Image (cartoon, rainbow, N blue to C red; front, side, top):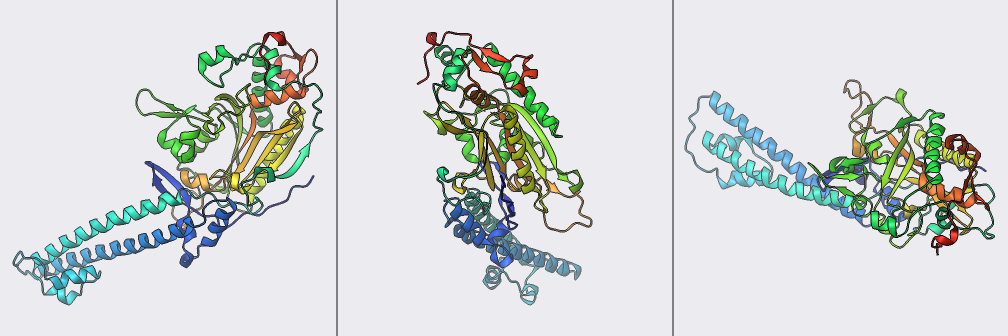
Length: 499
């Protein structure tokens, strides 16, 4: 097959603001300023393609214009304080008396309201009157700064809900039935009399019934016997697979501080995905993917072009509340609260289309992995309306599940361009000012699942089932002590069949 080569929306710019005590970096406000060379129409079009509110762009522009006006007023008022200080200094130098301690004339206060102070009028005042006028200006500055900060917060609250600029190849709809299929591999197996992954794993000794639920709640499970060997084999195989492709292994912490998680996760994740851990000191959040702590690894870091790209193989346990998946996949281990995952995470320059080339490389790495395992799949480009805030474009690799005669997601591969790196202040350059331009350039960050272990186990069981058990894919056998088949360990009639 051939995959279309895509360009990058070069107008994508980003900036930061504060929400929920986190420092969130978003689309650069300069992008909304047409008078500064920005392109608000680009944001409007991206919002339209995301099936999101377009009018928020004009709301941001209106609030930004007011903020800019207040900023200018504050700057002018501070200059007037300097004018007053200079006038006092000149009078002191001329050895003038401080004079009467009286309020300044209303005429001078009116000039302050106009952000102007004629020197000749100021010269008519005593030292004490000028000092009192300076105090009045200071109060004006404080009041102006308060309103200015309120407008900035109001603007940034709206700005924080605007996602990354969507790539032009993503279809402008939220209907995922319209995802573009960009490649397929393998021959999808017929249903025949095949069991689904839930029934198959029950026959292999998995426990997801009352005992598991009473032990750890809904979606809990115990892997027993050969299924444990399969999980460990997949982890070792996946890490070796990426290691041979010059990926650096990373084993990150499994929980993060509120500040660190706030820099790498979107706000909706805090309610829908993330578990809070309460203990000594500050509350922390369990990670939903190793992408999150690996992102945080690069906070406030400078990169030179010569050290890029960087490829990481992240391995971690992952924890997800799955609030938005209530009632879906409640049986088995396809969608669970705790699972192991091996992740690709890459950092590239923002130049010469390199991040888009890396995205193609990453999805091809994932494809090769599933080809090696012999799992039929297809790759789809996700529609714009189904993208998360950070992604400019996303591929899903969907494995074939013969029992249900459908493709199901095994891999998500996203190019987040510089949306995440602006939050993290991960920049290109040396960190030195000499010889550098004023333009801030940030690296591009990409992430892709390689192996969400429980889901891949489900796919292997359905595609490799036989009368005596589950045949082990040849590539996995060296990682499972040479095991060729996982034989049934329970009578299927002794376990409740999956509906």
